[in-house]
Length: 166
Image (cartoon, rainbow, N blue to C red; front, side):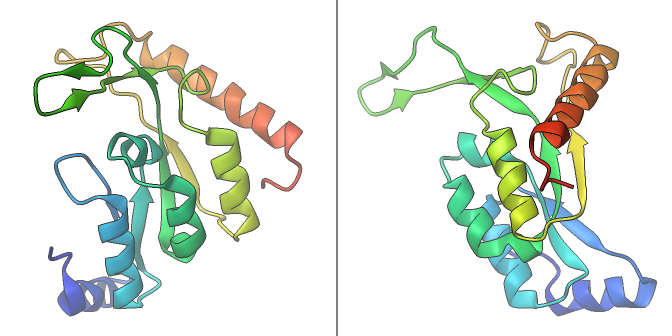
């Protein structure tokens, strides 16, 4: 896997910018990207952590956070539910589990615990809402305007209940 290596670090230094890459299914997983950021040792280069993708890709979220917190520069937040239809269907080789997008806080992503842990480890960067509703998928989801309002309320409630979360 090549994330730019030394040339990427030189490029960000020359331009005076920070760079993040996001973990994504069918691409690099979170551990690959976080290990690469750690190896590069440049504080301007980090990972935009997508915790729902960590779960979908069967990585251990809190192990990654504990080990690589300094390299997590942004959290791209979405939630997922396990689809019950055909759960654990076996095709003779694989058991299947499918996930679908849902309201933040209604799924299996441990958002409150994740953000509290990151805060405890010194995270003080951006948390962005990922709301993927398109012609291809997410038809069951409400509008992006509703999602943004819900996300703001979720984050506000989180801040009220967890005083150590900035």
